Image (cartoon, rainbow, N blue to C red; front, side, top):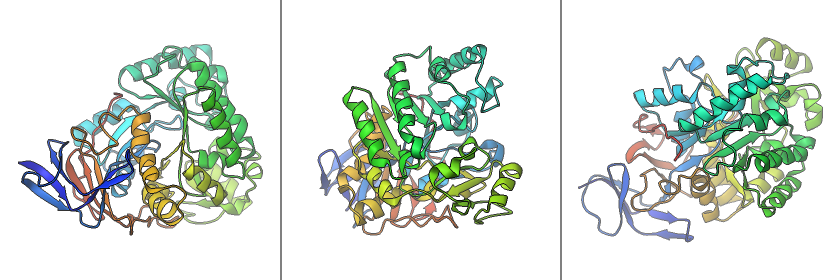
Amino acid sequence: MLDSKIINGKLIDAENDRLLDLELGIKDGKIACIGKDLPDAAQVIDAKGHMVSPGFIDIHMHEEDFAVTKKQEWDISKCMLRMGVTTAVIGNCGSNRQHPAEMEAEVAKKGCPVNYLSYIGHNFLREQVGNRNTRAESTPEQIEQMARMVKDAVDDGAIGVSYGIEYAQGMTFEEELGICKYILGRKDLLLSAHYRRDGDLAIPSIDEMAQLGRELDIPFQISHLSSCSAYGNMEEALERIEHYRKEGLDLTVDAYPYNAFSTDIGSDVFGPGALERLGASYADVELTDEPYEHVRCTEELFYEVRKTHPHMYVICHVMREDDIALAMAHPLVMVASDGLYRNHKGHPRGAGTFPRFLGRYVRDEKVCDFYTGIRKITSMPAQRLRLDSRKGYLKEGFDADITIFDYERIYDNSTFEHPQLAPEGIAWVIVDGKPAVEGKEILDGTCGRYLRRP
């Protein structure tokens, strides 16, 4: 007997641009069979009127900070799960909230709403070796120490290295190269980077990332291109990336479907001249937490909060919607949330990215066709993460990570005022073969596992 089976749904075969009127059977966490008139199952899920998709894969988000949650709850993981994400990549932008080994131990201890893979972050390592000055260069001794820590983390299952270049302006190109000296040429790894500068400096920042990928000879992922280049220069940025691809560079991109970015107000992102470079005003900066929740800044308030609440997440409403649409449509761009929360406060992308992409950009605005849209959130990230023999497709023998949704109703509900509201249209989410979400209710928040690099 099967553990469960899904009947009456439309199974998405995005490889071949088709929907299949077939049943799907699950046994021991795997897709056991696909066909008609499948064997009996302990649980039958009626997906009539719904699409049956591989679980969504978020290649760029930010995990819980145990220093904040005290390991008492999963915060963003629950939001991921409710919007159909079954696997997510953490440790992005150079920032591990805690060492990947600690995250792995916590997930092994009590389970997690979603599956996690992790980078080891350069900025995290800078702090570990004693360089807490974001504007200072690391010493040769510190770079050597970080290089050995990178090797250890990769040997222990990290998928590669992430850089948060904008968050540590003292980071030199030589340092970026040096920390990877023991993993040169590793095609089984992945590098990712948050650019050095955005706005009018986005193009030279893309050049730096391309050169880094070329020098290290490791596949490279440009993080959240939307917040880098959605200021009137997205078309030029995409053309530059296409140029590097034609030169043979293994370079891909992710982006989120919102025209506002979010980060710590005390970070180097908001250093001298930042707002002017983005063409922004202080009033474009929205504070997200007490005592100024949802307050727009004045010049005086901006600098006060930078000093007194430097870790408060703020939302900067400065990006161009036409540039966001260009990114969503481009064939090299996969969709990712860049989601991050602190005490349940932050940007709605952490709870709404994938329903927003499917509902607004694919169904309503038709920036790309349906099957391309599905590939951007399933098979494309699975291939980039080397998970495509296990995840990202509905195939017999693959992991039973599945999202069932109503394509006519799917849409994000999360807003800047209420950033963690569950979306509409997600009917079921199945993780590791177990029903984890029905509607907006989490049935089981322990199905996810920590995944080491394949």
